[in-house]
Amino acid sequence: MDAYVFEAELVEYPEVSRRLAVRGDQTLEDLHEELRRAFEWWEDDEYSFQLATDVQLHRVELKAGQELAYVIGTGDEWRVRLRIDDIRPARNETYPVILESRGKAPRSIRSPTRRSSARATSRNWDTDTARRYHEGTKHSYESVRRRARPLDWANQPSPYKESPGVELEPIPPELERMLRLGAGVVRQRRGYDFRTYSSAGALYPIEVYVATADGLFHFHPRDLGLRRLRDEDVRGALGGGEVVLALTGILWRTAWKYGARGYRHLFWDAGTMLANLLELTDHEARVITGFVDDVVNDVLGVDGIDETALALLQLR
Image (cartoon, rainbow, N blue to C red; front, side, top):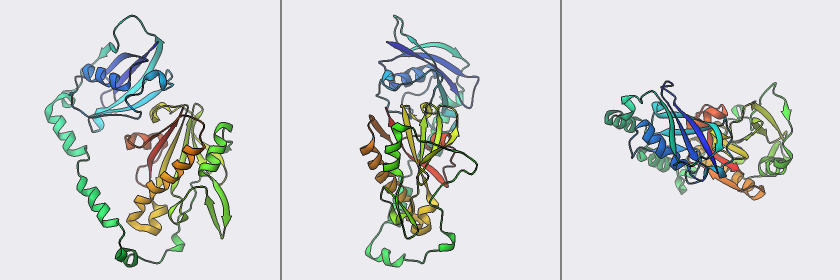
Protein backbone atom coordinates (compact mmCIF):
# COMPACT_ATOMS: atom_id res chain seq x y z
CA MET A 1 0.00 0.00 0.00
CA ASP A 2 1.33 3.44 -0.95
CA ALA A 3 1.36 6.57 1.18
CA TYR A 4 0.49 9.95 -0.32
CA VAL A 5 2.61 12.87 0.86
CA PHE A 6 0.76 16.21 0.69
CA GLU A 7 2.18 19.72 0.88
CA ALA A 8 -0.48 22.08 2.29
CA GLU A 9 0.12 25.83 2.05
CA LEU A 10 -2.21 28.65 3.08
CA VAL A 11 -2.88 30.71 -0.04
CA GLU A 12 -3.00 34.03 1.80
CA TYR A 13 -0.13 33.07 4.13
CA PRO A 14 2.43 31.18 1.99
CA GLU A 15 4.90 31.19 4.87
CA VAL A 16 2.56 28.77 6.68
CA SER A 17 2.57 25.19 5.45
CA ARG A 18 2.27 21.60 6.60
CA ARG A 19 3.57 18.35 5.12
CA LEU A 20 1.46 15.26 5.82
CA ALA A 21 1.29 11.65 4.73
CA VAL A 22 -1.92 9.64 4.26
CA ARG A 23 -2.14 5.93 3.44
CA GLY A 24 -3.80 4.94 0.17
CA ASP A 25 -6.68 3.11 1.83
CA GLN A 26 -7.57 6.26 3.78
CA THR A 27 -9.83 9.04 2.52
CA LEU A 28 -9.87 12.79 2.00
CA GLU A 29 -11.92 13.01 5.17
CA ASP A 30 -8.98 11.45 7.03
CA LEU A 31 -6.67 13.97 5.37
CA HIS A 32 -8.95 16.84 6.42
CA GLU A 33 -8.94 15.71 10.03
CA GLU A 34 -5.14 15.67 10.07
CA LEU A 35 -5.01 19.10 8.39
CA ARG A 36 -7.44 20.41 10.98
CA ARG A 37 -5.16 19.26 13.78
CA ALA A 38 -2.04 20.50 12.02
CA PHE A 39 -3.41 24.02 11.48
CA GLU A 40 -5.45 24.09 14.74
CA TRP A 41 -8.72 24.69 12.93
CA TRP A 42 -12.07 24.47 14.64
CA GLU A 43 -13.64 21.05 14.78
CA ASP A 44 -16.97 22.16 13.33
CA ASP A 45 -15.59 24.31 10.50
CA GLU A 46 -17.00 23.45 7.10
CA TYR A 47 -14.60 22.19 4.45
CA SER A 48 -14.75 21.29 0.80
CA PHE A 49 -12.77 19.08 -1.55
CA GLN A 50 -13.63 18.76 -5.23
CA LEU A 51 -13.97 15.05 -4.76
CA ALA A 52 -16.17 12.85 -2.62
CA THR A 53 -14.54 12.68 0.80
CA ASP A 54 -15.33 9.01 1.39
CA VAL A 55 -13.31 7.78 -1.61
CA GLN A 56 -10.07 5.97 -0.78
CA LEU A 57 -7.06 7.78 -2.23
CA HIS A 58 -5.72 4.80 -4.15
CA ARG A 59 -8.96 4.71 -6.16
CA VAL A 60 -8.60 8.28 -7.43
CA GLU A 61 -5.55 7.77 -9.70
CA LEU A 62 -3.65 10.68 -8.23
CA LYS A 63 -0.14 11.50 -9.39
CA ALA A 64 2.80 13.29 -7.82
CA GLY A 65 2.69 16.99 -8.67
CA GLN A 66 -1.10 17.21 -8.96
CA GLU A 67 -3.03 19.78 -6.96
CA LEU A 68 -6.38 19.34 -5.22
CA ALA A 69 -8.79 22.16 -4.51
CA TYR A 70 -9.47 22.38 -0.78
CA VAL A 71 -11.18 25.05 1.28
CA ILE A 72 -11.57 25.07 5.05
CA GLY A 73 -14.19 27.29 6.63
CA THR A 74 -15.04 30.20 4.33
CA GLY A 75 -13.39 33.26 2.86
CA ASP A 76 -10.20 33.66 0.83
CA GLU A 77 -7.90 33.33 3.86
CA TRP A 78 -9.07 29.79 4.36
CA ARG A 79 -7.99 28.48 0.98
CA VAL A 80 -5.27 25.86 0.98
CA ARG A 81 -2.95 25.02 -1.91
CA LEU A 82 -2.82 21.24 -1.58
CA ARG A 83 -0.23 19.46 -3.73
CA ILE A 84 0.78 15.81 -3.89
CA ASP A 85 4.50 16.01 -3.21
CA ASP A 86 5.28 12.30 -3.37
CA ILE A 87 3.73 8.82 -3.57
CA ARG A 88 5.81 6.16 -1.87
CA PRO A 89 5.43 2.80 -0.09
CA ALA A 90 3.76 3.17 3.29
CA ARG A 91 5.96 2.56 6.32
CA ASN A 92 5.05 0.65 9.42
CA GLU A 93 3.66 3.66 11.24
CA THR A 94 0.33 5.22 12.08
CA TYR A 95 -1.31 7.26 9.32
CA PRO A 96 -2.23 10.03 8.71
CA VAL A 97 0.91 11.63 10.09
CA ILE A 98 2.29 15.18 10.15
CA LEU A 99 5.81 15.12 8.67
CA GLU A 100 6.73 18.80 8.86
CA SER A 101 5.27 22.09 10.10
CA ARG A 102 6.35 25.55 8.95
CA GLY A 103 4.93 28.73 10.45
CA LYS A 104 1.99 29.21 12.81
CA ALA A 105 -1.52 29.59 11.48
CA PRO A 106 -2.62 33.25 11.94
CA ARG A 107 -4.84 33.95 14.92
CA SER A 108 -7.43 35.38 12.54
CA ILE A 109 -8.01 31.87 11.25
CA ARG A 110 -8.09 30.22 14.66
CA SER A 111 -10.05 32.80 16.64
CA PRO A 112 -13.83 32.83 17.30
CA THR A 113 -13.94 36.44 16.00
CA ARG A 114 -12.58 35.46 12.58
CA ARG A 115 -14.81 32.40 12.53
CA SER A 116 -17.98 34.39 13.17
CA SER A 117 -17.01 37.10 10.69
CA ALA A 118 -16.36 34.61 7.92
CA ARG A 119 -19.66 32.92 8.47
CA ALA A 120 -21.50 36.22 8.50
CA THR A 121 -19.96 37.48 5.26
CA SER A 122 -19.37 34.39 3.15
CA ARG A 123 -21.63 31.49 4.01
CA ASN A 124 -24.75 31.29 1.97
CA TRP A 125 -27.36 30.94 4.68
CA ASP A 126 -29.52 33.54 2.91
CA THR A 127 -32.05 31.07 1.51
CA ASP A 128 -34.55 33.92 1.23
CA THR A 129 -32.66 35.17 -1.82
CA ALA A 130 -33.00 31.82 -3.55
CA ARG A 131 -36.67 31.62 -2.63
CA ARG A 132 -37.31 35.11 -3.95
CA TYR A 133 -35.65 34.20 -7.22
CA HIS A 134 -37.70 31.01 -7.44
CA GLU A 135 -40.96 32.79 -6.75
CA GLY A 136 -40.11 35.65 -9.08
CA THR A 137 -39.26 33.44 -12.07
CA LYS A 138 -41.63 30.50 -11.77
CA HIS A 139 -44.32 30.03 -14.42
CA SER A 140 -48.04 30.37 -14.02
CA TYR A 141 -50.91 30.67 -16.48
CA GLU A 142 -50.76 34.44 -16.16
CA SER A 143 -46.98 34.83 -16.22
CA VAL A 144 -46.52 32.96 -19.49
CA ARG A 145 -48.77 35.48 -21.23
CA ARG A 146 -47.69 38.57 -19.30
CA ARG A 147 -43.97 38.05 -19.90
CA ALA A 148 -44.20 37.51 -23.64
CA ARG A 149 -41.99 40.00 -25.48
CA PRO A 150 -40.46 40.36 -28.95
CA LEU A 151 -36.91 39.11 -29.43
CA ASP A 152 -34.07 41.45 -30.34
CA TRP A 153 -32.76 39.52 -33.34
CA ALA A 154 -30.04 42.08 -34.00
CA ASN A 155 -28.61 41.24 -30.58
CA GLN A 156 -28.95 37.47 -30.80
CA PRO A 157 -26.01 35.76 -29.06
CA SER A 158 -23.77 33.37 -30.96
CA PRO A 159 -24.39 29.71 -30.13
CA TYR A 160 -20.65 28.98 -30.23
CA LYS A 161 -17.67 29.98 -28.13
CA GLU A 162 -14.75 30.65 -30.43
CA SER A 163 -11.02 30.86 -29.78
CA PRO A 164 -9.52 32.77 -32.74
CA GLY A 165 -6.00 31.72 -33.59
CA VAL A 166 -6.11 28.51 -31.52
CA GLU A 167 -5.61 25.43 -33.66
CA LEU A 168 -8.28 22.74 -33.65
CA GLU A 169 -6.96 19.40 -32.40
CA PRO A 170 -8.56 15.98 -32.90
CA ILE A 171 -10.60 14.46 -30.10
CA PRO A 172 -8.90 11.43 -28.51
CA PRO A 173 -10.45 8.28 -30.02
CA GLU A 174 -11.77 7.05 -26.67
CA LEU A 175 -13.75 10.31 -26.24
CA GLU A 176 -14.77 11.01 -29.84
CA ARG A 177 -18.05 9.07 -29.87
CA MET A 178 -19.05 10.30 -26.43
CA LEU A 179 -18.55 13.99 -27.26
CA ARG A 180 -19.91 13.79 -30.80
CA LEU A 181 -23.12 12.00 -29.84
CA GLY A 182 -23.42 13.49 -26.37
CA ALA A 183 -22.83 17.17 -27.08
CA GLY A 184 -22.18 17.71 -30.81
CA VAL A 185 -24.22 19.11 -33.68
CA VAL A 186 -26.45 16.42 -35.19
CA ARG A 187 -28.24 18.24 -38.03
CA GLN A 188 -28.90 21.62 -39.61
CA ARG A 189 -32.32 23.01 -40.47
CA ARG A 190 -33.60 26.50 -41.28
CA GLY A 191 -30.34 28.09 -40.26
CA TYR A 192 -30.13 26.30 -36.91
CA ASP A 193 -27.48 23.80 -35.86
CA PHE A 194 -29.34 21.28 -33.74
CA ARG A 195 -27.34 19.35 -31.18
CA THR A 196 -27.83 15.92 -29.70
CA TYR A 197 -29.37 17.11 -26.43
CA SER A 198 -32.49 19.09 -25.60
CA SER A 199 -32.09 22.81 -25.02
CA ALA A 200 -34.74 25.39 -24.20
CA GLY A 201 -35.32 27.49 -27.31
CA ALA A 202 -32.43 25.70 -29.10
CA LEU A 203 -30.11 28.30 -27.56
CA TYR A 204 -27.48 25.81 -26.31
CA PRO A 205 -25.85 27.80 -23.49
CA ILE A 206 -23.72 24.87 -22.25
CA GLU A 207 -19.99 24.63 -22.99
CA VAL A 208 -17.80 21.57 -22.43
CA TYR A 209 -14.18 21.60 -21.27
CA VAL A 210 -12.05 18.46 -21.35
CA ALA A 211 -9.21 17.87 -18.88
CA THR A 212 -6.78 15.05 -19.66
CA ALA A 213 -3.17 14.27 -18.82
CA ASP A 214 -2.22 16.35 -21.87
CA GLY A 215 -3.87 19.55 -20.65
CA LEU A 216 -7.17 21.44 -20.65
CA PHE A 217 -9.22 21.79 -23.85
CA HIS A 218 -12.46 23.37 -25.03
CA PHE A 219 -14.80 21.19 -27.10
CA HIS A 220 -16.30 22.78 -30.22
CA PRO A 221 -19.63 21.03 -30.97
CA ARG A 222 -19.86 22.04 -34.64
CA ASP A 223 -16.21 21.58 -35.61
CA LEU A 224 -16.01 18.38 -33.51
CA GLY A 225 -12.56 19.09 -32.21
CA LEU A 226 -10.67 20.42 -29.20
CA ARG A 227 -8.84 23.69 -28.71
CA ARG A 228 -6.03 23.69 -26.19
CA LEU A 229 -6.37 26.20 -23.35
CA ARG A 230 -3.71 24.99 -20.90
CA ASP A 231 -0.75 22.63 -21.22
CA GLU A 232 -0.62 21.55 -17.59
CA ASP A 233 -2.58 18.67 -16.08
CA VAL A 234 -5.46 20.23 -14.10
CA ARG A 235 -7.42 17.04 -13.39
CA GLY A 236 -6.45 17.05 -9.74
CA ALA A 237 -7.78 20.59 -9.32
CA LEU A 238 -11.08 19.35 -10.79
CA GLY A 239 -11.35 16.42 -8.41
CA GLY A 240 -9.31 13.80 -10.25
CA GLY A 241 -10.05 11.07 -12.75
CA GLU A 242 -8.61 9.75 -16.00
CA VAL A 243 -10.64 12.43 -17.79
CA VAL A 244 -12.75 15.26 -16.35
CA LEU A 245 -15.44 16.99 -18.38
CA ALA A 246 -16.43 20.39 -16.99
CA LEU A 247 -19.78 21.85 -18.04
CA THR A 248 -20.26 25.61 -17.91
CA GLY A 249 -23.17 27.88 -18.77
CA ILE A 250 -23.14 31.15 -20.72
CA LEU A 251 -26.06 33.04 -19.23
CA TRP A 252 -26.64 35.57 -22.00
CA ARG A 253 -27.42 32.85 -24.55
CA THR A 254 -30.53 31.87 -22.65
CA ALA A 255 -31.31 35.20 -20.90
CA TRP A 256 -31.60 36.80 -24.37
CA LYS A 257 -34.92 35.01 -24.73
CA TYR A 258 -35.96 34.02 -21.22
CA GLY A 259 -34.67 36.92 -19.13
CA ALA A 260 -33.98 36.22 -15.46
CA ARG A 261 -35.61 32.80 -15.79
CA GLY A 262 -32.78 31.79 -18.10
CA TYR A 263 -30.58 30.98 -15.09
CA ARG A 264 -32.81 27.97 -14.45
CA HIS A 265 -32.32 26.79 -18.02
CA LEU A 266 -28.56 26.51 -17.59
CA PHE A 267 -29.05 23.62 -15.19
CA TRP A 268 -31.83 21.99 -17.19
CA ASP A 269 -29.75 22.04 -20.36
CA ALA A 270 -26.68 20.77 -18.52
CA GLY A 271 -28.79 17.93 -17.16
CA THR A 272 -29.96 16.80 -20.61
CA MET A 273 -26.38 16.84 -21.86
CA LEU A 274 -25.16 14.89 -18.83
CA ALA A 275 -27.82 12.24 -19.46
CA ASN A 276 -26.38 11.74 -22.95
CA LEU A 277 -22.78 11.65 -21.79
CA LEU A 278 -23.48 9.19 -18.99
CA GLU A 279 -25.28 6.86 -21.37
CA LEU A 280 -22.43 6.96 -23.89
CA THR A 281 -19.38 6.59 -21.67
CA ASP A 282 -17.62 3.27 -21.14
CA HIS A 283 -15.89 4.63 -18.02
CA GLU A 284 -16.91 4.57 -14.41
CA ALA A 285 -18.46 8.02 -14.07
CA ARG A 286 -19.23 10.40 -11.23
CA VAL A 287 -21.18 13.66 -11.53
CA ILE A 288 -20.09 16.40 -9.12
CA THR A 289 -22.27 19.46 -8.60
CA GLY A 290 -21.09 20.49 -5.13
CA PHE A 291 -17.77 22.29 -5.51
CA VAL A 292 -16.12 25.65 -4.88
CA ASP A 293 -17.28 27.69 -7.86
CA ASP A 294 -14.43 30.21 -7.80
CA VAL A 295 -11.81 27.46 -7.85
CA VAL A 296 -13.31 25.62 -10.83
CA ASN A 297 -13.97 28.86 -12.71
CA ASP A 298 -10.35 29.88 -12.20
CA VAL A 299 -9.05 26.56 -13.52
CA LEU A 300 -11.27 26.85 -16.62
CA GLY A 301 -10.45 30.52 -17.17
CA VAL A 302 -14.06 31.76 -16.93
CA ASP A 303 -15.24 34.72 -14.88
CA GLY A 304 -18.16 33.18 -12.97
CA ILE A 305 -20.49 35.96 -14.19
CA ASP A 306 -20.89 35.75 -17.97
CA GLU A 307 -19.86 32.10 -17.90
CA THR A 308 -19.80 29.86 -14.86
CA ALA A 309 -19.13 26.24 -13.91
CA LEU A 310 -22.22 24.04 -13.47
CA ALA A 311 -21.08 20.42 -13.15
CA LEU A 312 -18.07 18.13 -13.35
CA LEU A 313 -18.14 14.66 -14.91
CA GLN A 314 -15.24 12.56 -13.68
CA LEU A 315 -14.36 9.49 -15.75
CA ARG A 316 -12.21 6.70 -14.38
